[in-house]
Image 1 (cartoon, rainbow, N blue to C red):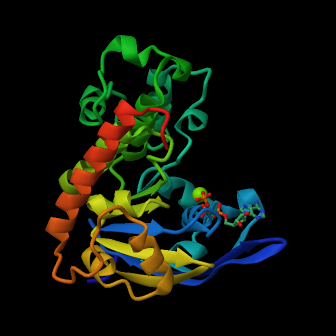
Image 2 (image 1 turned 30 degrees about the vertical axis):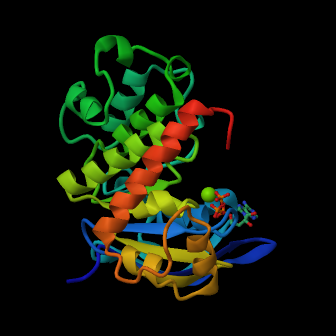
Length: 287
Ligand SMILES: Nc1ncnc2c1ncn2[C@@H]1O[C@H](COP(=O)(O)OP(=O)(O)OP(=O)(O)O)[C@@H](O)[C@H]1O
Ligand SMILES: [Mg+2]
């Protein structure tokens, strides 16, 4: 079967023309793909390129982006507008700055609904509950400044999945959160992926977060995908020196354990995340 998303692109900016060099990725329907790379490696550039938004930052994309049977590089702007938010959801890292500070949460949810609505607006109590928010009227009346960063991130996730997209692009959705909230948001994304069969491209510089629920992972380094494959395999047998360095930098993940399967690995990572979260509570300043 054809993958839901299949791309091969190069992208860059004036003065930085080769940020992404012939980057190829495939993501099957309902699949989870993690994209890891250090700061500045081009992860957000890739996310914006897929949504054909790179020109807003003065960037250029070349190549093909096959999504659900069409090539996005050939779609007109009107079709892209229909597709963004409806078939492809996007969650960005900076939750607070992604919400309009002057509009109530309920109003912003309603506007996100109206952007693609086929039916009348109903307060999305169930949706908000599914992202772990107290979905009462008092909450919907609040302004972004009156909720926490973790709550704002959940609101953004709710908005991104409101129209049940078949693909969610999550660009460092947990980086601004404390470790406990991070783990909760990861669990939430995993549940949405499972229950809605929503494919997820999860972008992060944190291999540990990615490993806790992505079935496959791609490593972006110096503008190229240096390694891509099943998460357990990448952890147990990293082939590229950069991946090896990343994996070796992780706490207590034995490199030599080539028999390590993904379930064991995930359990260990979960344990590790919980311990790190506990340490975060005890030493909130330490990092
Ligand atoms: N508008 C722009 N004009 C020129 N160069 C840019 C522009 N935006 C980003 N870049 C450069 O492109 C490279 C990739 O940026 P990008 O934001 O995609 O990195 P990233 O992997 O998402 O990093 P981070 O983990 O910090 O979010 C960086 O070197 C950055 O400086
Ligand atoms: Mg980025």
